Image (cartoon, rainbow, N blue to C red; front, side, top):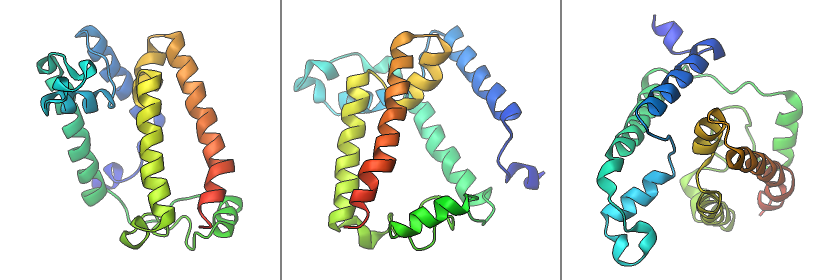
Length: 188
């Protein structure tokens, strides 16, 4: 049983489970999205005194915070207890390209230590990626009216045209980041 749990679940297990969660959210009149939790947390912290955007009744969003906490705890459990210690299976072409960008052991782990380590955190490269990436994600999710999970899972399942436009924009942004910006940042 543990062997089944520690392997990635196939699409025919994960997909229907996501669909079931989406159906239950729709049935109970809820909408899934992780970025809305930031607004709720800021509202709980009193940001409504500074901005009307945060001035709302956050008590109705406790379920979403509970979902977020469950996702964090579930991620911890999956990483700590259910992950087989093996590398990421990526093509040799991607390995060579990542090595040319300065990543020494691509595919050894999901998060390359060359990019995400305490030593790199306070480097110019680390600050550009952390602060710049955080700003772009925050601005983008606010400007798009939701995050990738909210638009790609909820919005697309509800056939919302703004979500389709947002998801296409997310993919274009990801391609620009991967092929144009990241090769410029990594050599720093």
